[in-house]
Picture (cartoon, rainbow, N blue to C red):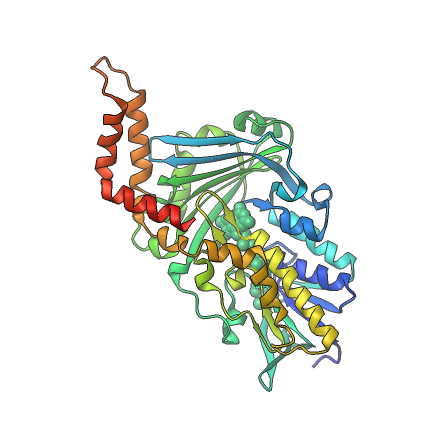
Length: 429
Ligand SMILES: Cc1cc2nc3c(=O)[nH]c(=O)nc-3n(C[C@H](O)[C@H](O)[C@H](O)COP(=O)(O)OP(=O)(O)OC[C@H]3O[C@@H](n4cnc5c(N)ncnc54)[C@H](O)[C@@H]3O)c2cc1C
């Protein structure tokens, strides 16, 4: 067993882990981050958009130096069927403050930059080594076992991401069920910068965040996404894990069909595939938040289920950053009192309760249930497409009043279903 005892050992150099390391090291704490990937970000994936508020509060002006891609000014949401697409397109040309901005990014680059910031202020970082076990003595976490070595610490922060094996080992996290998870597959497609601007109607470094409901996930819970980077686009699909068994398409086939959709194909024509990745996303919101603190240990980020899929936007990165910061602050408070027991670390829970993390997870607590409704992903995209087709098709037959057209297509879904789903949808957001 190593003689040295760190104030904190952090498992995982994702956003939660690197931010926790940065906040701790900046205050002079002795911190070690252990990452199983060859470098920070090597195993990490995201669709692509970071809401900057939580990091901006920790590293003001970070976007000027960080490895970000484009500032999002264009939001698009499309209902897609196999042969139609109906899009809501919002261009934001208004001034935004730094905390209101959001950016597209690539995790390989961004996570290395963030871990580098933590190292600059004194955090120690080792990569290419997996933490295999958490060391427990008399019911208290006292360190980790990695690559055969035992390393001791006054506290351990688990920032191990969506598959919290170590959290489970400690009995803090319950085995995650498939209906609490979605699977994502993503391609990074290289295109010249000017081509991206032209095809997505962007000025200079502006970026586009585009979400799709309907056919990308084969009508199942989930959807598609496109985020524009500087000289590539991140294109992918997400599909509820428990739905995949009932799908007549595999996830790679869904992705292939999405890319070949008549609305998408011209956007990526001539592009070169430079990266392919797959990852799981926590989807059950507040319902999957585990025990967050115990003697000598705290759980942050995806490992704690801190992720929000609101349909028109996906957020996990800003929650990972804010929860990493809260965990670090709780360790600093414990260090002041020299009490790393669950009680000594309990300010973590309070900081989370007082922050947007628990407030937002509580606000959207009914949403995961609402999203299980299959009509949202198959019947409604089709209904919207049918209404559009009726409105824009002129074939010389006498026109119908729009009211009648609307009623005809709404009837196909069922008025009661529309009222029920509309009410549930509104009350769950
Ligand atoms: C397809 C998809 C699209 C998404 N889109 C968005 C989006 O647009 N915007 C957004 O905000 N969020 C998005 N998310 C969610 C977001 O990516 C996550 O919420 C976020 O990455 C969580 O960060 P984290 O630091 O908790 O975990 P991670 O980034 O997963 O980091 C965990 C780290 O721990 C390491 N690790 C794990 N186990 C060990 C071990 N035993 N020993 C050592 N190291 C270990 C891993 O290698 C990894 O580096 C998306 C997710 C997916 C999958």
